[in-house]
Image (cartoon, rainbow, N blue to C red; front, side):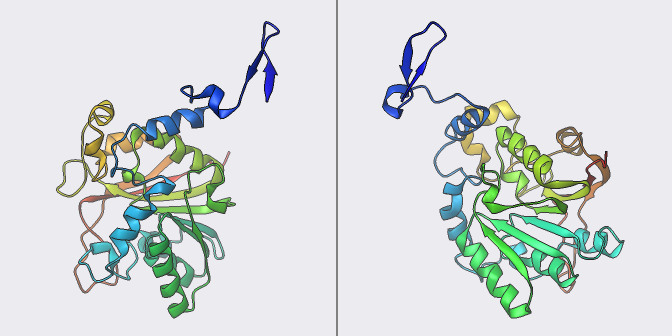
Length: 266
C-alpha cells in the first residue's frame, strides 16, 4: 500500500518498509515504553496472563487476598448508601472474584475483568457456587477493545490493579476512567502505600526506566501522589485501610491506601 507524500512522492506502509520506525500514535508510544521493561516484570499487558496464572495456580497458598472476603472499605461504602439499587459496577482486576461476588450479592449489575484465565476460572466457580450473576471478561482492560467492557459504570472498583502499572500506563488508566466511569460515578481504589514492607517500590518514575526490574513488586504511593494522579476526580476519602482480624467477614490490611473518588457530574 502506498500514500502520496506532501511533496507528491509516494511511500510504503507495509511492515517491512517501516521496520525500525514504530511510533505514529500515542498508543504506539505506550507499547514502545512497555517493551523497555525487563522480561518478567510485565504485570499489566495481555502477555502477563502467564505470570498471573502461575500466581493463582495454588489456591491454598497463604496469600491474604485469596480469602473469599470483600474489602472492608468497599462493604462500608455500600452500607453507607454509595450506590443506588441496580447500579452498574466494574471490578477491575477481579482476581478470584471476592469483591465481585459481594457486589452481586448486594444486587448490583456486575462486570468483572482480569488478564488471567486461572483467576477468571476461579471467580466463575465461586460465582456458580454462590448462584451469583456476574459478567466476566477475560483480557486487557486497557487495550483499545477494553476486553469488551461497555460502560458507563456507576462504580469502578480496583483492589490491586493500579499499583502494578508502570508510570506511562497511568495514562491508560485515566483514559479508562474517562471512557467507562459515568458522570457522578465513583472510583473505589485500594493500592500500595509507599514506605510499607511488601508495598512495592517508592523509586521515582524516571528511575524505573533506568532500572525496570524495580517494578516487579509494584509501586507504592503517598497520599499526595495519589491526589495528584486523580486530580481530575473529586476526593471523598483517602486513608489507610484498617487491619481486619482473622475472624472478620471482611478483608483489610494496613499497607494499602483506601481511596474513594467521584467523577464530577457536569
